[in-house]
Amino acid sequence: MRFVPVLPADPAASPGGGGPGLLVAEALAGGVVMVVTYAVLHSVGQSGTLGRGTLLLLGCGALALLVGRRRFPQAAMLGQAALVGVMPAASMLCAIVCYSSTRRCERARRRDVLLGSAAVLPVVVCLLRVVVWQDGRWQYAAQLGVVLAAVTVLVPGLVGTAAGQQDRLVLALRERTAAAEQARRLAESESRIHERSRIAAEMHDLVGHRLSLIALHAGGLEMALGSQAPELREEAAQVRRAGRDAMDELRQVLGVLGPLGRDTGTDALTDATGTRSDVLALVEESRAAGVPVEYSWEGEDLDAVQPRVRRAVNRVVRESLTNVHRYAPGAPVWVTVRHLPERIELRVRNGPPSARPAATSGLGTGRGLTGLGERVALLGGELTAGPSAQGGFQVEATVPTDPDQDGAADRQVRESAALEGLPAIEGPVRRQMAGVVSAALGLAGLGAILLLGLAVVQEAHYYNYASAPPPDSLHLGMSFDQVTALVGGNNDAVSAAAAGREPDRAAGTTRCIFPYTSATLQDRLQITRYCFAGNVLTDISHFSAPLAHDAVLSVPVPSA
Image (cartoon, rainbow, N blue to C red):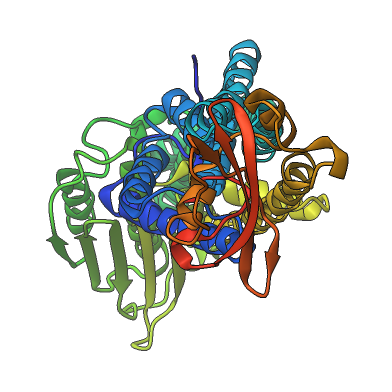
């Protein structure tokens, strides 16, 4: 039979064997439930004739089936169903096992066969115990078995079946929702990539061509002015350099607008991107340009982390040093990288510039830092940038070494659900608390139904077994078979209660029977004795016996 795991919200149906702590906790909780069930049954007069050693042995077996239901669900369910026919105090444990096993069973046909087989076992065991062992009537045994099977097997099994179907439906809906959300994200990503590629193509064809012409003509003008007007050659060189810088910046913009899965140009992602050697190369480039940079690296290299994390490290350091070149030329710079077990901390700080930047360099728009913040946020990190207390500028970033895509997806699903007015997914602790409360209420309800059913069976037993027969139906001289057909056979529990307390038997008596009775008067059990000489009824005696603990009589339902 195939069993599938259900949602972790159901502790009783979680797959796997569980750890030792969980097994011990379940055994202790099951023992408490069984003791409480026995106490309740005993308080309403439903105790039987099982000895303490037998009760202890059967109780240990019930607890073993409870803790082993995950690994052997079918055997545990059938074993508990058979055991409850002997010891009704294990009825609540049987309900738990039946609920758990049917909830985890996926195949409907085999689940129905298992449930039907388990429902038959209490009836069969009750018939064997009452008729064969206690010499009772089969009608009472059948009624008792039907009540136990309905309350402890069928009802929990059907509820577990419905819960399992709901679990699988919810799981399928979540998978479908996740697939639809993923498809929507892919469609949006493709749409953005297509739009960015179109914008990049337009800018390359129009702006790139114009900037190339400007740089070309500025170079020619610079060469011509070298011989005709040397005093204007520097202005032409500035125009050429401005065109070249504009082309470089255009290439960077086109790289940003291109597909997110790849970088273009000289900044393409390689195996060394974001590693210690790569960051050191960026620092050396700045030093070669005349910027005093102090560099420190703490921790292991980043060659083992994900490429997107190394790319983010490269971008943060590169953009920060580029901003120093543009807006704080000549200022001292401190670059610090710390590789911690769960995160990477980056800090690029520069002091105040020695001179104001040239007016031709323009003012920053801040879009580079905004893009960096978005890149870091996509990885689950944080980026802060702003003036420092020493008069310079500081960029700090924290990037996780192993970004949690699933956690980000869950947060996005929660936000989407909140925007759409849908209930968000509950936390595991809240689901477990709800499961425990629901289980307690369910067991209490089953216990009440079980007591009601046993009371109905007991009343039926009183009417058929213990009601006094009509006055003219019993008389001396009747045969043994005629008497037992009216009052039933001998009851071992009544015989035990009458031992040492019955009146003297008449001479010639060969055997006596003590039919079942539940009639009491002033805490004394009212007993009727039928004595026979051979096969003929010779004496009918009525007497009473005290209701001692060891001789308490009730419906012959074995207790736990």
